[in-house]
Image (tube, rainbow, N blue to C red; front, side, top):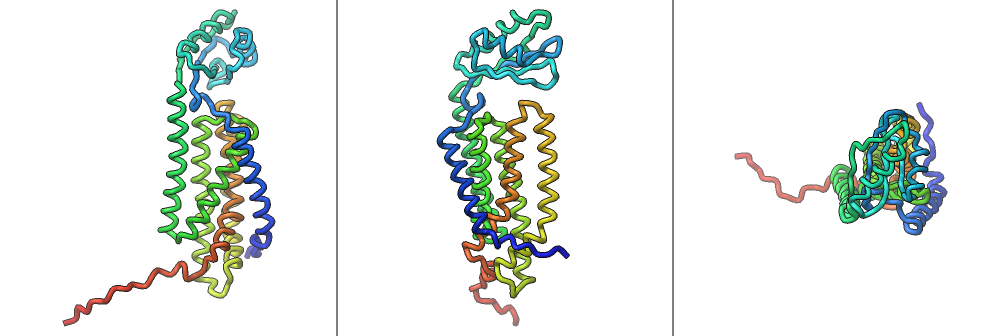
Length: 304
């Protein structure tokens, strides 16, 4: 039998670490700001295909020589396909860039597969809708947990999820990783992953209130977290290995997505132990909170 680990014995140290990390993440978020991608700011996307494998650095240098200093060149799918992203409000900009690249193609000419323009108004709507979707997801989670468990569990889960989002977005802001729709999707996925870890621990805490009647709340949390530790570690490590493979082999297009997931999984595993559980202690969860309210209606005697 696995020896019980005193996780809550260092909860004050963990709380201090959490506060420092959260403040630093918020400072980076508001001081540096997010490096919004073209999905949110508006701009032009050009997909090119070459007859031979394309040299990304060479194409980038040619764009700089042509005066397009803010262009972002990425490999896209096959080695002969490139994706060029650049800010600008001119719908004709994509065709101008494509023509410039076709002229300097040499023995490896480029052909344009598609040109897309996203206006700044559309980007602003996407940003607002993404933020609204995240808030609705958090509200729905809290309502679900309040009915599924008890409102104190819902508060603990929401505080944990907010921490995960703040830390992830703060690190992205600090390193100025491009924040586009794929990264937003990763943040929403982090919410679901972290919630899954938290619910596993919460469910064991609730069950142990019936089994460990003489145990204190802190003892219950230590035992419950220890009992679910192997499951949590197996899930987290296997997920991190898959994400690491995506970071290495996924290319530039999936770098922001996979990096966000990697940070979020680490933050979610930590917060399910040292944030969600600590909130339960602050709210003084007890066995009486889990007892259904007694019926106040009068029983009707149907006997003749």
